[in-house]
Image (cartoon, rainbow, N blue to C red):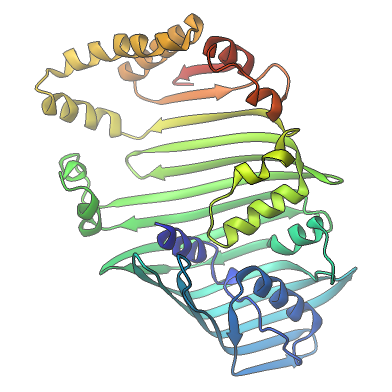
Length: 401
């Protein structure tokens, strides 16, 4: 699973994120060298290239390769890009540069690990208005953070083809936008993975009961979208995000959240762990996170026909009439939620599910404390009194809104 996560991360971030470090390339101009140094430090990969040509503010690199041997649970990595072109490089001062446009032609990726061997091809990728920052010899956590973030007004890549154990997945494109201040990292971004297509043969590998086929799906198609707003306040950050996984003609599951007073050092470590394909070690970061303010969040499902398809199938599997199954769901939920010791939420849940089943549009679980709650306060909530915790967190459940 870690290997699959890595290949999807690499592919979805496009070739723009695939060109780590030409090590100490004496012929690379400062902007290109700064970018390469940053990525080399983050990936610990070994780079090479056939030639690098400089013409004023333009740079061309041919046959760029990036390799890293497999070690323990970390898969081996090989990335090859036939042509990389940077145009309109300008010095913004304070070790900050902007690349007017970057293009990456014919990129291939190979990953080999203990559980699988995966490959991907990306014929074309580009970035416009791309900011690169050099890291000082003794970087602060903020220096590390700013160098690890990809600040580009626009990035796009695709189509992308991914091959794994004889199966082929495709992505039409990955598109990102950003609008903010490269000096602080504050700004708004959006990313969309367009049409991740999973063919029927691949679906059948994990759906041995042919449930998806019985529901009328020969293959599955997904769109993944996320957007965020990062604000900077000295050594702390505020962050709000939305993340959505939408199955075409199925439905969309969305997650949102907002926090502030997040230490830059902690956020930088989270990004570093994610870039390396590791899980975030929240236990290790816990001492730094105690004063983080939880402002709110939500989990939402928007139906796009799946509910009306799955109810009759679920009833048939249980040997029940569909109307009997529908009538049994609300009281089952009521009985299940009694242990939460919060009558108001239980009633909300039963009413919301009843309304959703009658007219499936959306279901949403929201958290909205009356005032931002510190993580230390959240951790201090008494698990023996879940009803009080639900009230303090401002938990609510709604349907079709």
